[in-house]
Image (cartoon, rainbow, N blue to C red; front, side, top):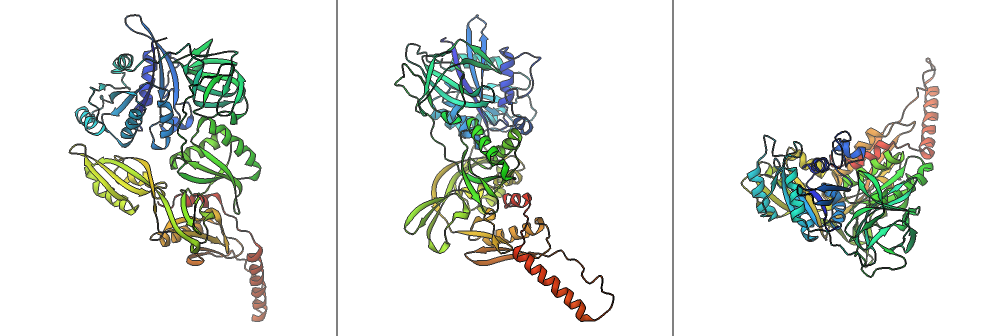
Length: 595
């Protein structure tokens, strides 16, 4: 049992983590050639379609080296996108080492830098790997220089091509030689960390754990320390793509536990499992609670789907512990949930998962950030623009800021400067990693990067720039609440918080966009944008008209006038009592405000 190695693979998005994981599984014989398919650990259709990893995956590999010594290698494949950093940080807590993959054609990128910092803070042994060396555009020497200069890693990297299977045996040997073996403490009472979980319709909640002390076996009575809930263990085992049952899981091992848990609320990611009869005093400190940074409303298309959405969110929360939600109501959309996400890609993925995995039809309101407001001498936090108090009563508005790290080629420096200035960024650092690659750091409002910034960055740099951010202290902002009125009624789902300099252009964009999307009715519909009860933009959807004069062949003008007056009166009443149907596309228009 001293021959256990727990390690994860970390890298920037699209540097070849999942392909490397495939080769490691093949090399150790964990999966046969017949069962093999690309991105084997990415089980979600969404992950395969987009070519990204969304969920961290744990898998056990049994390996015998050339001398006949047997090893258990527990591998965790992690996501690379900045919005899923929490998945990475949770995985690191269950490991002793990390394989850091760097693409030889792209070099060190923003998330490479961020993940290296996370691994260092978790005191993991880092094994550097330069991947994709078989490609004609690979520049190994430059990548090695960037690694030394930007990441401060002097260790000799392993040169690999995960696609061609080059260098895989060297990685395995390096993991065995350099990653510290898991500390074995069998005599102590049970202490196991929950680092993931998911819901199975037939077996209840399945919990993924790393055992630190003692052992857990079938029939044992255990307690979850956060909820104080007690259960009897029905099955334990480990993951080898499929779940394989075993008699027990001992100190140092990674595996799953089934205990017939039907109440989702009993499970908390980062909790410690202890034995009921002999609880340990060594509780794991758990994970730092993650604060959501982007908020949006999720509403079902039909009110009858509300309970289905509530259940779906509870089940999704098990496998995505960074998701936060609470109920809210909207005048325009009815009952729904206000959800907190780590970024706009996280929002997009959660919406797609809810629609695919649970068969829901959802509307999403415009994403926004959390503002801190000084109101009547007191500070309050507001996550929904519709709840903003009257602007006259607000003394100060503090908006969240981030420190953005952009790594790009010197060819695109000018377009990077323009983009960041347009988004109200202030440059704090400019540092050359070599003659061609430069690191830029900017302080920017979070609200400016949650919609469209990533796409604009990729367009401005022809796809070459990479981006990462960390949160810093909030700063005072000159902000205004912009409301949209349709047929003289405020629609709260369209309310946005805009900077003073941009409010006018945002108002014109929204009114014009909505005029094109909302269908014509039998009465005229005014669309108005207002700030502090002052209308600053207006568009009008003209009424559909029936030709009431069609039956008048000649005759007196007074007869025609009478018919037109009657029609006008009918339209006036209709406008007073009529309901405007707002199609779902109108809410999506607000999401694309920056494009």
